[in-house]
Length: 320
Ligand code: GDP
Ligand code: MG
Image (tube, rainbow, N blue to C red):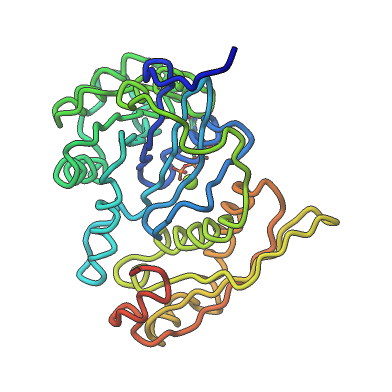
């Protein structure tokens, strides 16, 4: 009596790669926490680009989803560094499914259902348009989040009509906070994911890729607080990452590189006000990711015109 390896694909679970996209604050991190549970399982040995990071791996009942983030996707093309935006969309090639997280705005939550406008948020409309243009093969599911805020669920009807006017037929209303609708969303995702052997061990553990994620969270804050060329001219290097078991906290030192002295002045702000804001926001996000207290020290330095030279771009991981 020997065990023969099973070759029948129908005996395997669904295994695939899912990109999660969405503007800031729509609830992507909350959804991720809900999907992954308390444990953040991060992969370190896959090639990661700065525009495409692995957020976690969810494994259950023989199914496995590798969840990807594509942070640059909502940025409209700036003249500068347009290759970064292009890269964000390129990173969708090869994913099995894109989940676009959108939210029920607080304005919608307050008004009567018949007063709700089906008009999409401009950035959501942009993403739908771009995803369709760049990667027509990846099916897109809209996760309409924060439905727990609605006084009247009938308000979902005009909102869903707005998406279908844009050619989107797959929509799942969810609350990432309460978990409502999340199993339905998972079911919809699985419909697009082929059966196959697991890509990663069932019990992935967190490791040094945390540094990379911390750098991205700092970068995200810069995108949130600045417009135009400054965010595109920044690169982050985490210089030290120290987990202190005695105090159960993390000490992190990171350098924000910009191209010019003038950008450095903008990033620091009057009396350091701007860099302070970035530090507070980033520390909060990193603490959420790591689940402990974080001490973050940020420094701003100039790396002359780094985006303009291949060597500069390579240094910060934007080119192979
Ligand atoms: P991200 O920027 O897209 O990652 O968004 P976050 O997950 O950080 O969430 C932004 C804010 O929305 C946080 O204050 C969350 O607590 C809140 N939020 C996320 N999901 C829900 C939800 O389903 N319902 C409600 N009421 N709030 C939510
Ligand atoms: Mg987030």
